[in-house]
Structures are given as C-alpha cells and as structure tokens.
Amino acid sequence: MSLSKRLGAFSLDIAFSAPAHGVTALFGRSGAGKSATLGVIAGAVRPDRGRIALGDRVLFDSDRGVDVPMERRAIGWVFQDARLFPHLSVRANLNYGARRAKGRDAGVRFDEVLGVLGIEPLLARRPSGLSGGERQRVAIGRALLSQPSLLLMDEPLAALDAPRRAEILPFLARLKTRFALPILYVTHSLAEVVRLADQLVVLDNGRIGAQGALADILARADLPLLSGRADAAATLDGVVAEHLDQRGLSRLRIGDVDLFAPRLHQPVGEPVRAIVLARDVLLARVRPEAISARNILSGRIGGLAARADGSVMARIALDGGPALLSAITADAVQALKLAAGEPVWAILKSVAVEGAAPGGLLALFDD
Amino acid sequence: MSFTPDELAAIRTSLIVATRAVVFALPLAVAMAWVLARGRFFGRTALDLLVHSPMVLPPVLVGYGLLLVFGVQGPVGGWLLRNLHVRLVFTSTGASLASAVMAFPLMVRSARLSLEGIDPAIETAARSLGAGAWDRMATIVLPLAAPGVVSAAIVGFAACLGEFGAVITFAANVPGQTQTLPLAIYSALQVPDGDATAFKLAGVSFALAIAALAASEVLARRVSLARA
Image (cartoon, rainbow over all chains, first blue to last red):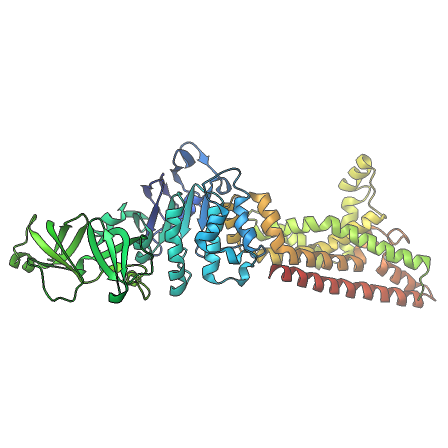
C-alpha cells in the first residue's frame, strides 16, 4: 500500500507504505493530520493530488483521474465514536456491512468475530442500551464483517475511560493475530502504539516525522514525539513461559533470554511484548550480588552513541538474542571503561508488560 | 345524529381530497426537506422561501396563482388538458392540488426537523460499509426520520382537511366534487336554516382533527419505542 496526498487548507503531504498484514500505527499529537489521512484513504476527503493504492488496486490517482467512491473502496472504518445505527439491533448492525460485501471475502467469520470481541450476548440488544466499550466492540465487529481489504481505526479508544480502554485493548491485540487483514491504527497514545503496532508512522504537522518498524522507532531517542515522554526503549517480543505464583512473578521467554515481570493475566504460551526503557537499564562490569532488581542479564556492548544532552546511549546485545538500550553518563563510560564488544551485566529496574496488575505498567506511556 | 346525503358527501370529499393530497405531496415534501437540509447549492435560500411562501401569503392569492399556472389557459394546466385530458380547475383533483400546496410547507418543516437531527457521521459509517446513496436513504435516513415523516403526513392531512381559501379559489365550491368540510360549513352558514348542518359538520371537523392529533401521538410513540 502506498499513498501520497495534499489537502488544500491544511497541508498534508505524506507518503508511506505499509505491509499487507499487521498493525501500522499512525502516531502524532492532535492536529498532526492523522484523522485527515484516514479520511483521505477511506474516500471521505478528496486530496488535491496524489495516489492511493491497496496492493495493486488503485483507489485514487489524480494523474489518471481515478477516484473510487467510498462505498466501493472496501475499507472498514472504525470511528472514535462507535456510530452504530440507533434504529437497528446489534445483530443487524453487524450484518449491515456483511450484506453489502458483494462476495468479497477477507476470511472474517461471523462466529469468530462474536468470539474474539465477546459480543455474542449483545446480539439482540439496541445500541442505546450498550456501554461505551460494548458499542466500540460492536463497531469493530461491524467493520470487520464487511470483509474489508484494510481496516482503519481512528482512535478507537480515545472516547473511552481508562477501565474501558483496558477492557478493549486485549480484544484489539487478539484481532491482529486472528484476522489477516492489514490495520491502520490512528492514535496519540504511545501506550496503544507500544501494545499493538508492528509498524509506526509518526506524523507531525501534516508531514511524516519518521516511519519504520516499531522496535527501530522506539530505540531512537531523537524523535520529538517520543523523547521527553518515555525516552528510548527496547521492544522485546516473546511469550509467557511460566507463572511463579508464590513469588508473584511471571517468566517471559524472549529469544533465549528469561525475563521476569510482575504476575501477568495472560495464560502461558500467549505472546507478550515487553518494553524496557533505556533509563531503566543500569550497567555493571561484575555481576551484582544482593540487589533488588530481578532481571540481571549478561551481554556485550553493541555500540555507544553520544547524545545531545551529554549522556551516552549504550546498545547491549544480550547473550541469547535481544538487544537492550541503556542511558548512561559519559563519566560512567570512562569509569567502567566501556567500549564496543566489552562484556557487561545489564540490570533492569523495571519491565513494562501490558496485562500486569494493576492497570499495566504501560500506564507509564499514557498521557 | 344523522347526516343528509350532502353532508356525507362533504365528509367523503374532504377525506378523499386530503388523502390524495398527502399521498402525492408527502414524498415530494420529504425530498424537498432533504434537499433543503443537506443540499449546498446556489439558490437554496430562494427555494426555501418559495416553498414556505404559502404559509405567509393569503390563501386566496395562492389559489389565484394556481389558476394562472394550472388553469385551462395556464401553461401547465393547458398542457395537461391538451395532452393528458386532465382538468384541474373546479375538480376534486384540483382541490387536492390546492390543499397540497398550502400544506406543503408544513410537511416540509416537519420532515426537515427530523432529517436535520440525523448525524451525517452515521451516514458516513453506512457508506464506508458499502451502502450507496439510495441504499443509505432507504436503510438509514428514512427509518431514522420516520417520526418526522409520520408527523409530516398527519400535519399535512389535518391542514388539507381545513384548507379553505386556496381550494375555493382554485377548485370552487361544487357539492360532491370540491366541497370539502370547511366549504360546506361556509355554505351552510350562508343559508337561513343551515345552523344545524354547520354545527354537525363543525363537530365532524373537530373530531377528525383530534383523531389526527391522537394518531400522530400514538405513531410517534410507537416509532420511538421501536427505536429504543
């Protein structure tokens, strides 16, 4: 998928491509042009110039005069406000798009949607009788069942309070693993990005600030939207290996590395994503004894980069695969004689994993 | 209470004239309401004023205008007579036309209020789910506007039952043809012993008006219940 476009009053000038599967997050502060971008892709807003294509299907091309109307773009659109049809039952809402799919099949089954989103008990209800979270789940189901080639999600959690948000996030995470369609997810919440996104496009004032794989973007400390809030971070994808109830911990397996996190809700075997902030990683030349941190991992310095504020960002390649970042002072580099290739111990002060009680450590990223 | 054949004819004429007027005018009124509520085009304000003008003009003037346009010498009336052999002046069809024109702005206003209450965002959602313009109209807009459309029909019906000036000017006062209830009451009051007839027909008018109001209440409640 590739697109570029320009709008009159607010100048939006972006070009990006997203893979045919997985979640691409469109991230930026309010007014950065995220929602406008979705509107253009969906066909609600006509760009002055540009080209939008889904795979090899061209939806808009100003040079060739192509402009497929919204109702024929086969793009599911989930709005901030659920926008359910008030005069129809939940079941009829869900079927609205499905009945108009015209033989299109994105592999989304009715029963599966009910299961993944947990909306089976709501089928006979009217939208007016649903909670905000329930409404949003129905809206997501309705968009999915229209068998779209692409799912747009416009801050689907923004209108909900924190408990509702926490209620829906796991559904969204399941969505991405269960259905094969690409998702373009607009948000200004770094927590949602960190939890859901595979690819990240950072929008700033109608321009693209950065784009790439989530782990690469999070590892950069120079991005205006990320720095000062959460600093650089390492993204570690793995699975829940074991629950240690007596110790109140869960063991995560990341590559060949074991990581301990506060007891998680997720069952053993479930994929998890752990985020480790650079400022939460201390370095030592000898293995520290009698220390409160639970995660002490051995590795080697992969590289050292001086930062604008005088500190140094160290990249540590752990023995067994994943890499961590550590923000240290230039003085520490001197004192510990750190250099690329030198063995070190990384001490992780905290590991953020969604699903840890209460509320999840990713609250750290919330604004 | 018993009615003379002439009185029964007036009641029947009123019901026929009003029903036919509403059946033909309602779809046009809803369409006009939609255009005025959502349309963004040059001359919208002028169209709005034209549609509403029967509300502020003297009904006799509207009837006279209809005579000019739809009379046998008028551009539209002459064409209808020559090509379709339809004569509107002094006929029951003409009475329907005159009362429909008078009731039209009321019907447009009522339908427009509920059309304007529909969030365009809901339609965008329907569109993104693959619904084209007519599809959205049939499955989203009209069902959501149903209370307004129902009340437009009833308000229009009541207004048609009561229309006097435009009907008598354009369709005259022909018993059994164009003599609706208000015209029959007026005629009865012109003759020395017509008080009893006038009183009876006034009672019928009153009963029909109350019944229309009650029907609109019941229907509105049923529609809103069905949506809750």
